[in-house]
Image (cartoon, rainbow, N blue to C red):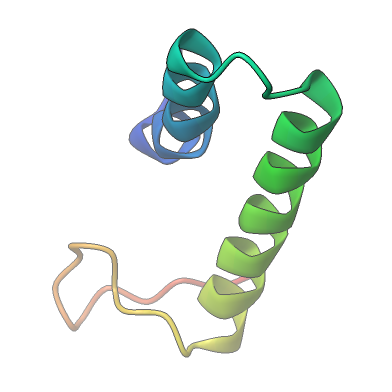
Length: 61
């Protein structure tokens, strides 16, 4: 089952793939990979917002 985080990563590439004929699979893959790495890095470093969790919610990586 897909989580919200995975859907947020996949949705832009899927929507662009539907409407933009020049989008290649390589650029979509690398865009999703870089976005996932940046989001994960920000989440683990503590510089990202709490993603809807209350302030008492702590994320440990």
